[in-house]
Length: 383
Ligand code: MN
Ligand code: MG
Image 1 (tube, rainbow, N blue to C red):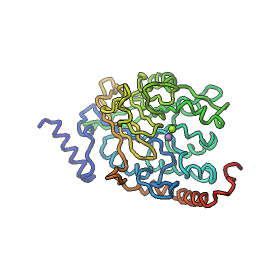
Image 2 (cartoon, protein in one colour):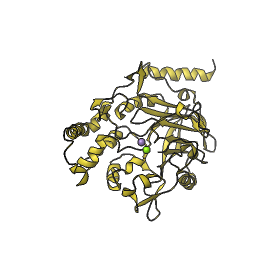
Image 3 (tube, rainbow, N blue to C red):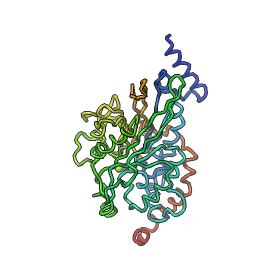
Image 4 (tube, helix red, strand yellow):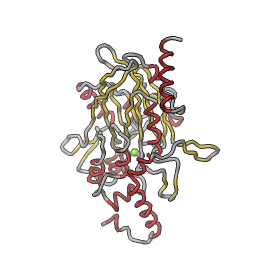
């Protein structure tokens, strides 16, 4: 047995002893040597206000969705890794009756938006905007995002005067522990992108106030700026899907991955899972390696169905330059199907439920009332 495998085994046993047999350290956490560090990137995407594992349309529990369930994966996922960051990829505040209830009925005068409040319990490092963030108008969006305890970056929306609508990117210093227990500082750069088609889809909310530029174009503009600022690793929060051709630019994550300087791509918007068979025929998308044009990438389903995981074995040279020595990618589900039946793999996280409990209860009353009064005028939408 060489010294490396001896170290691995000790690290593995230390992990299982404190956390129970269910937790196995990611191999990178055990294998990292001096000057190498394991960094685990966690992605949620397209949450669409799904905090509770509940289908408000059916008025019934549903084990296939809900951030409270995805969150239950986090403790174990963090424990499996030496270092980790949690990121969200957009489409947060719209998409179920709780979102409509807040936007059309209750408003945001007292307290944070329930899905933001739920996210605030989990320690997100950054998020971005999805196209559906604009469905209720810019004023509501601003009020909702003000409650977030983490930065929201988006690069490709510009105001009428040409300046960025949102913070385009954020560079955050993070302390990484290497395989020998030494601490290194790494500068992680988060840069966000939204489908430029929001100008068509939400023209009544946006026309004359903002405009968009292409995702690849925006990356080519801002990545050199981030590099000049001394970023070590650029993580794209791309609220955009994966398509062989760029076309109108709605699903540009594959082409974004090809931009020099982008190191990792979190994708979404299509409500699919990458790596997964939906993408097997796309040239440049490697579902075995979990890469888009050679860059590690993930798409974590929708409504909290999966936690996207990109694990990096990072290496620092004598000049302090970091490179990705190896990677693995996984989209870890919150449920499985056994003989056609949905079986949850985790239980809800109580703190996440508690953050949205009041609004959840009020939403139940809202949808039950709405169903009972279908003939009533839709006063709250038009006044
Ligand atoms: Mn979506
Ligand atoms: Mg979307």
